[in-house]
Image (cartoon, rainbow, N blue to C red; front, side):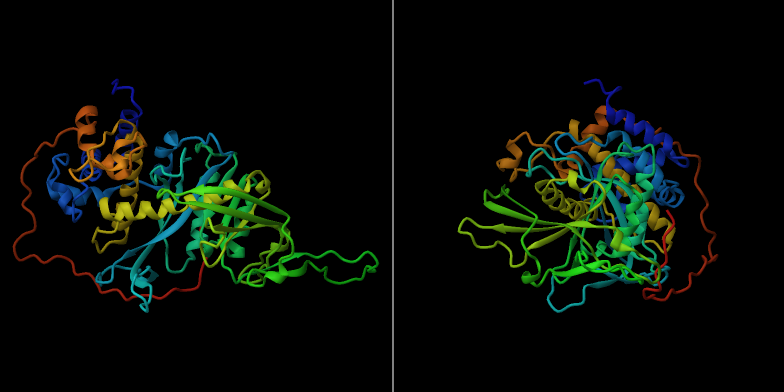
Length: 469
């Protein structure tokens, strides 16, 4: 294999040149992170044979990291796979918590959402939230692994809506001419919390962006108002909204404008029939405060997705409602819209992998800035695993060697690539230079106390502000 001209080698040298401070230590930390799936804490990464420094250098790298959102996006841009079968790029936006309930000295902690599996418990924790925008690569088959390519990650301040921050991240990426999807058709897929009028209206500044968002089954929309032919013209405010379209009231739906049926096959070998109904040119109510949101100018397509078993009974108690908004929404077919929303859950799997294998939420620090630096370094490690997937080999455990997934030639999962990354480093090498000891630091003098940090209060969500892109 020609390792000198391989994309992984080019990526690693570009990353190395992008580290402005402590480049050698930063590259070693990145390699240790990508090749140590069983580390229980961040400091334990210093025990990796690929981190050739002392453990104190690890924390200095995190503290002095200058990696920005723009750097992360530009490093990943040359390795984003262009869509082949679908006519659009698929991007996803979501937030995930950083629990820090015992960090009394950490600033800007608040009550944030965290799901819980215990019925009756409040799904909250004390800590921070981070918003991430990723590219979802096109899949040849539904059984391919859940790969995502992160492009932007930011901490959500308590005074800012997470949805508006996600919009600011997405708009910054779409406006960047260095990104390969600049000026091309893009679909942004998100959960129901992003179906706010202000959130959907903010994205209409990009003509090539189509918003695909789930909506709750208790929402009420409207058909455009069409005055009768014999109605005289009268002065006053024009009427925008016509008949109600309540998702919980089937008698208000009327016949769909479009209906398609297809078949889906799950990884467990089950077959279901998918029925997709569509109603075109519906409207939702806008807002007047804190800013004017004229949603009557933004018609959308509403799609209802229902899965049926072989005997004709519904698979789920409630149907899936999707809003498709954008000037080019007609270019996204019903099956493509449903498959795009199904692929949104790959971002949830990526969060689980990053927290379990890449220690995403394990860095304990009283400095908010250092925590943000760590999150960007972990997402950069995710990009490096994506680039290295083509040269990785399967290393199954003894109890995994007979699994069907180990016998096929399907693409490797992030876990398997991380398991083999140590061999990849030995084959491709590293641009980082080995450590050279310059002497022994005397350290803090005996009897000299360190600076005391003040206890920080736990804050509640404040009035939302508009983020700056």
